[in-house]
Length: 121
Image (cartoon, rainbow, N blue to C red):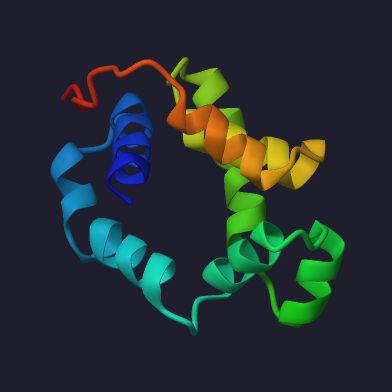
């Protein structure tokens, strides 16, 4: 979650947002609920994808909009536009739209060289 929040904050700041905004309820608060609540459609979808279900199977099983799917694609497009490195977002897009195995995506993320996670204001 920490690395995900760093990515989100970096993109927001690159787009003119205030880094402090992401540390409040609308930022970290929403991320915590999304990542931990069994009521979260995004979390349920992530679990199903991690279990090997396809995106189509996952979306059908959830029966409601999984906002993270479209958000992941939009965030990836914005990251390219604003030249912001977002490795988690990139891997999520490769799983969702490129057919990448989620286990390989996680391994690729864990094997990355360490870098600063500072959000520049």
